[in-house]
Length: 232
Image (tube, rainbow, N blue to C red):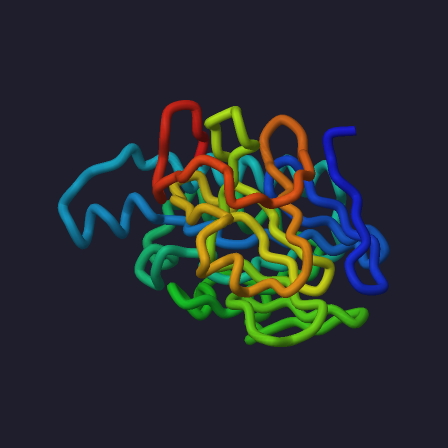
C-alpha cells in the first residue's frame, strides 16, 4: 500500500502520500497549510510574478484525495489561504471547484496565523476541533493527542539527499506537512520542531508513497523553499 497506517492515542489514522491525514472511523479528511493564492499575495506585496497555477494544483490534489476517501468531513487545519485578500481574489473557476468539493459534506476551516478562514466561502469556522479524544488546531500547544500544522516539516532519508514534506509524530503529538503547492518548509531536525516532542520521533515522508522512518539528526540540512525535483 502507498499509505501509512498508525495508531495515535486511541485512534487509527492513515497518512496519505499527498500529505493529507485520513481518519477512517470518523470519515474525516484533514489537510493543513494549503496557502491558496500565494502567487497572488506575492505579486501584490512584492511585484514578483509567479505562475498562477498553485491554487488549481492544490485543489486538484485535494479533489483526488476526496474522491479516494469520500469523507463526511473535511478539516482544513489553518492557513488555508495565504491571506484574506487571496481568499477574496480566488477566480471563478477555482471558486467553482472548491464549492463542488464542499457539496454534500461538512467542511471546517480552522483558524491559522495567515488567515482566520475565508469569509465568503461555504463551511464552518472553528478555532480548533475536538473529536474522539483528539484535538486539531493550527499551531501546536501542550495538549495531549494533538494534531497541528503550521511548521511545514520536511525530511530526507539519510544518504538520499532528497527532502520531502513529512508528518512528524511521537505518539502524543502529530504535525502535518504543508499541503499547498507553493509552500516552503522547515527541516524536521530543526530544534524549533524537535523541541516540540518528548518521545521517539517518527517522520512519515510524502511522495509516491508514505514512508515512515525514525527521525535522526544526521539527515542533510534543507533550507526552506523549493529545490530540484520538489513539487512543493
